[in-house]
Amino acid sequence: MQNTRYAPSGMVCSVDHLASAAGVAALDRGGSAADAAIAANAVLAVVAPHMCGLGGDLFALVHDGTVTALNASGRAGSGADPARLRAQGHRRMPHQHDVRSVPVPGCVDGWLALHARYGRLPLADLLGPAARLARDGFPVSPLMIPGARAAAQRPGGGDFARALTAGDRMSRPGVARALEAIGAGGRDAFYLGEFGEGLMELGGGEYAESDLAKPNADWAEPLRVRAFGHDVWSVPPNSQGYLLLMSLAILDGLDLPADPRHPGWAHLLSEAARVSGHDRPAVLHEGAENVLSPGEIARRRTLVAPTARLRLRAPAGAGDTTYLCAVDGDGLGVSLIQSNASGFGSMLFEPRTGINLHNRGIGFSLEAGHPAEYGPGRRPPHTLAPALITRPGGELRTVVGTMGGDAQPQILLQIITRLLRHGQSPGQAVSAPRWKLSTGNGFDTWDTPDGQGLELEEGASWADGLAALGHQVAPLPYGSAFGHAHLIDVRPDGMLAGAADPRAVIGAAIGR
Image (cartoon, rainbow, N blue to C red; front, top):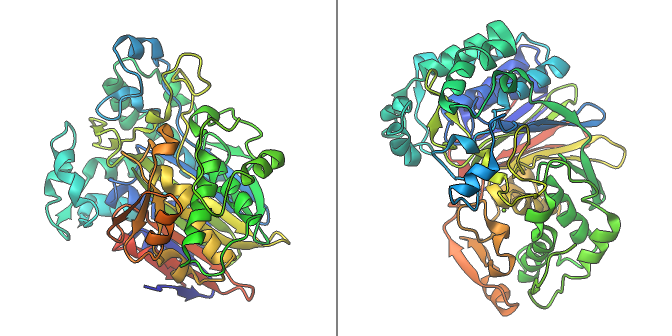
């Protein structure tokens, strides 16, 4: 399954061919890569609500000669009260069906920030294809069907009663109205319009109007490490992107087998991921700093043994998402990730438009005094971790990312290592079998770092060797729980080489 696609002057990769096509259409009309990313993400907000949408959050990296990071993750409402949750017996944030795990969604603010800085086409034109699909109908994705029945039974989820089999036509008229309102009236038409009014009603005191009036998108300084002769970038906390960068920096100083099929390859990568992330619940919060100290990276590297699995005895000093990427003919590159957290998010629907709301608030802590404690105006720790790679001279090399909850850094660690260290093509790197640290719901990997096994995707060659090194291994079918990753690689001659993950079934890398 080596599905590399090539194009001379622009490319978009996403989990759904309708979204990729909308992005390329924006490029054809003279739009930038940012325009293409917005158009593609808007379509995904309509056709892939089990992964993302207007009720979710967004992070992005942009290369325009330099690299910038966009944090469009929402903040808890003014009514956030951790003491009340603790008094009700909660030891961690409610996972679903509770509005307190729904920070104000940041997706639309992210679109507006990208458009204001990098857009060339009118916003209404970019959102138009998505609005038409929502209004006139679109074919149901096979990826949506498993969760659609439960969504249809929730208040406000009636649109999903039509999602019975792949290819069925369904429409989302409330989402169409929201998209058209944004195109015509900008931010206030969404956050202070029909959607915002419904969110206030649903919140029952969780939000104040001032929470919705405050934009959620901030431009930030990205994080960077040097690995395999390149600079690899991700977004700073409250994102867990530092875990990918620390893992790569640790791995860059280890004696890695030349063949990725060797069990020692998977062992060293998985151990680098474990020593990077096992203290994440204590370390990751919105204000975290110095998370990539060279001395700490070197110290953690010494913990990795090539002959045995490490016993992590003490701290070192916790879904559903979609990723897309776009590169235009001028070399602008966008690495964008957008998410609900769990499938269909909180399983709560804003009552006026039917937009499903994320549950990114599950990243908050309920430990009193914890730096990531749930509270008014705070951003929760996030699993979203887009990546971007530049050559030593600063030229764009790759935009890459994946869905996968806690496993996002682990998946990207494998793909980037295959791409940079082993010279694999995008199609080879994206389609190759993967490992990941075992977890319960996709967001609790680091609750018991020593209790993790390694889940191995069908076709992996590492099982016996990893067991001999002390790992508990479990086989899983190909594509069942190993993310949907996409990437675009800019070759030295300027040709674009991209791949959409075959696990996405209907994903597409489309060029022009």
